[in-house]
Amino acid sequence: MSTTIARATREGERWDQSSPVSDVFNEGQAHLSYWFGPDDDTPMAEASRRLTRKVVDVLGVRAGQRVLDAGCGPGGPALLVAEETGADVTGVTVSGFEAGAGTEKAAARGLSGRLRFEHGSYAELGHHADGSFDAVMAMESLQYAPDLAAALAELFRVVRPGGALTMTDYTLAPGVPRDERDALAEKLALPLLQPVEEWLVALRAAGFHVEEWTQCGPRVFGMGPKYVEAAEEGRETLRAAFGDEAVAGLKEAMSDFFSPGSERIAYSIVTVRRPRA
Image (cartoon, rainbow, N blue to C red; front, side, top):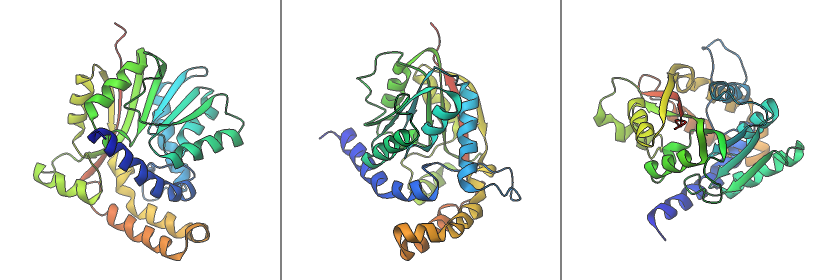
């Protein structure tokens, strides 16, 4: 087994274990939430959908377009895109649980004709022809690519000329010394943690043209107490599904995870486009 395949398998197993909690805790969304400030009382799941809608807006997704959700989680974002835009959406994930959860959601909403989920890697999409998609969204997934350059090359291949890709990911906050990077990445269990400028270099190297990017760490990663509050508010639902120990463990893990704050961990939304020629 190659190193790339082995790592993808390990990532799949990791999400098979953690995503059932996300599916219940955050209504099928495995990514973070976007709040306007400490006084914003929007529920966590709706704040997560707010982040998805920001991605949809910058992509300019329209009815009838073909969208790839690369690293789709348990299906919440892809479901939102299909329902709210009328686009045809394909979600890809290395997690068997996530692919199954997404497929069930699509069937329950009567969207199986326009919303499909595949168990596989977004870095290996050989069954999709060149230029198969009008747009690609990658929410907190590219940082887990076993080979980032290869993954970006594959996404470049499957998006049509003139099509766009929008990614969201944790990034190293401006001014954080390079010698802190590894420690922060280990604390957050992130295989890759780099400044947004390095993401831009990688995307350009893949052939994409950078159109815009936004750093919104204070409104996303900087809202740590809100995630802990959401775990407390959802205690009974989580307890019924996973038990008391899981609830306590989740709150403790979230408090520790968000402890670096937005002074060290930023959050970036980057939109790039494949040139038409």
